[in-house]
Image 1 (cartoon, rainbow, N blue to C red):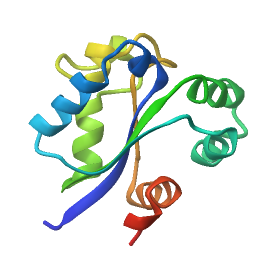
Image 2: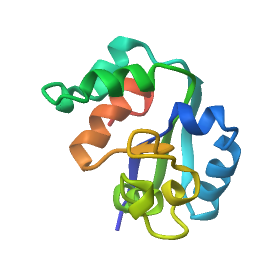
Image 3: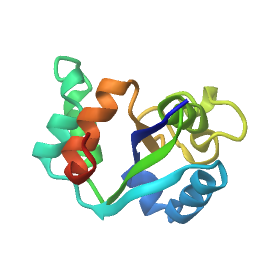
Image 4: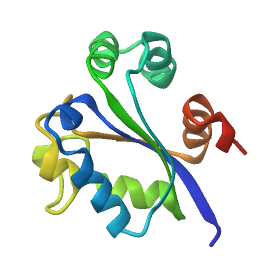
Length: 138
């Protein structure tokens, strides 16, 4: 199977809790190649674009406010089957229901403050990579 690139983000809750290094270590220990990494303060415009799929949902504003509330670490991760591998490593959205050993189980506090974000499909990964790492767009 060919190498795949996915978008990953360490959210403001995990950055504020000083868990970024631990999460990056887990990523590398699980065989991902980090081909892009940057610490940014996401703009409202970027957040609106990132979460556009949720714009009609009642929690959209809360999501945008949270993701722009502090620095985040954005990454482009490369690995065979990277999208599924990253989602498996993150765990389910609700940390209380996430499997032991997943990032969200270890570092997430709630459904909203769940430490990480990851692309959910090939098209989403392509769009999110283009938004934050245009030099890596294919």
